Length: 468
Image (cartoon, rainbow, N blue to C red; front, side):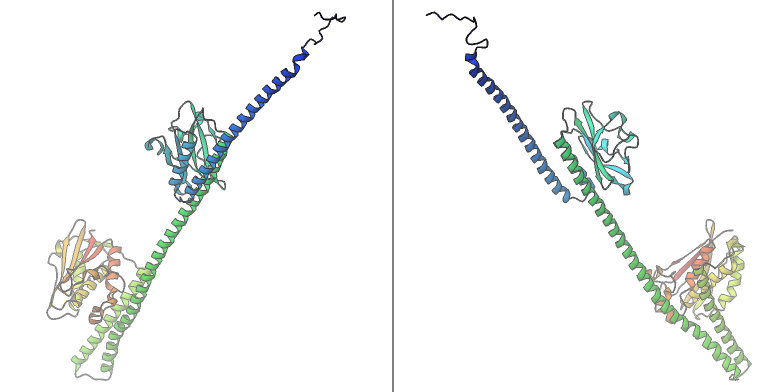
């Protein structure tokens, strides 16, 4: 069947084939919808990945926060943070520093992927470890490998990686930092940088707390040390106060005894209570001896006062030793001693060289030592011995007296020490003689010492004086 003629000569369906338009539009809409669905699906997948990554980071940050909260040591903090950075961001190498040595330098505390010998020497100055490079110390950033500070030239890194600076700053104080090597194919995205920033803050606060804890520990140790020292000082003061009290009581007795003798003998002479001239002379001699003893006691007290005030002086001059000993002899021979005690003198004085001493003070020392030896010796002998040493002349006063215990030898050159023993009451004395002798001998450039095998075994006092 033939179509009727078309006077216009046009296709009745039109040039686009209008009979196919509804299907083509549906197909185009379907393809567009599929593309949009694919995009949404990819966005959802990316969002899920980011959510999973973020959840993992938050869980990690929480675990790290718990670990740091239980840590008070800078080295442990550095180790934890460096491990987290290395594992989370694929860092093959890294080093963490903390502020040490009272804030004078940054010390490497932990290394990752490196031998200890490689990172241990990498010490850097504080407060700015990067003096040769303009760097915002409180901001994480990539480091220019070509312009690393001289202290970091030994930090190894691969050509296909970069060095990232992670500072630990708290209240504008750089408490430490880490430098990690990050491969170039591992981009640090905004979520990564946010996590690193949180880690930085957590680490900085922990380091600051560790710093405070260490400072408080140091202060506590200092206070404990000062408290112990104060207690020792107080104990020494109490002991000194006790000894001084006993010394005053003993000195009062020692001064009163010769003074009573002087007054008593003088009263007897004034009242004529003597049988003859010889009896009167003996009373006057006893009175003179008591006065001399009283003068010696007062001189000891005055000498000690001069020593403690720094006003005691000696005039060391070359002096023949035999001259000093010859002056000592008659005085020492007149000292009271028991009948069974012999006083012996050296025979080799003429062989001794001149010594550099103050003659009067050396005489005072020898008389004091001989007087003590005679006082504490009931039988046997007291002898003065002399020998030449290397650059020194050694004088020894050796007795066979009561001796000195090992414990007492440690205290014998202390002030008033005799006052704490029972011998002071039996033998008399103020306990100042040896202290004064020690100061005098040392001021003349010599030394004094004591040796005794123990109680009842005698004592040897040794004086060394320089050869002129």
